[in-house]
Amino acid sequence: MDYEGKVYRPWMEANSLLIQATVGCTNNKCTFCDMFREKKFRIMALEDVFQDIEDARRIYPSVESIFLIDGNALAVKTETLLQILEKITSTFPECERIALYGGLNDFERKSVEELKQLKKAGLTLVYAGLESGDQVVLKRIKKGITAEQALAGMEKAKAAGIEMLLSFIFGLGGKERSREHIVETTRLLNIMQPEQIAPMALAVQPGTELEREVEAGEFILPTPLQILEEEKNLLENLDFPTYYWGDHGNNIVPMRGILPKSHEFFLEKIERAIATHPVTQQEILQTFAW
Ligand code: SF4
Image (cartoon, rainbow, N blue to C red):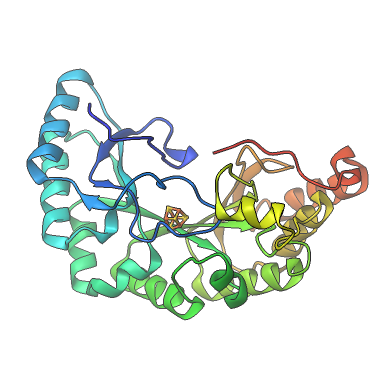
């Protein structure tokens, strides 16, 4: 398999076969992200994608799930994406799940009918980065999407029956905007009601604009206590059933499970961490690079 440059996939897809459909990401401007900095977005030639699928078939006797890399593969034209999905399902009839990254604004360029076709062709899950529901934060991090666009994207996914996993970042509002960030994020999530959510604690990646802002004093990092309080606030106010992937490696209290079933258990863990975890005495959360 010939992957171009560094490859990223959600941690939930650790066991999936990765097939490269795009190189880079169409936005590539988010201040906190360094994933595709060295790549200029392009869509892989269809024959190269097909070749990778056939090569993978020769290597792997059984494949349960496939993840299409790189960045927002949902930006690929529907017709092309359908051909890729059809090639995958005919080559790997045993494959149960096909997922990809999509920008919530990628849904603008697809009709509900097209999205239904993608689902029918085998697309089971779209991972999208919401990052924040706070308009001020979204603008500051250069996400290239508004809360309204995010909501419109989600409405289309729901209308097409496409399952969504939304990720967002504790601490992305910084020290001063911690409360607005989590209140607005929770409010938007309660409207969007994604089937799965994945909150991650903010990690400053080397070489990013965020790192420069932190060094210049333009962005003051939240304390670990604030990050825990954001998670507490989120859990106290989420009001829809979803799967909670709170087990990212940078999270202070890694936990995952079904909500609302695990609600009390999760809240107890967070409250205990707020009261007793030594990290609450620190000014900054120590994190690792993605
Ligand atoms: S966070 Fe997502 S949209 Fe933003 S630059 Fe990184 S990959 Fe692209």
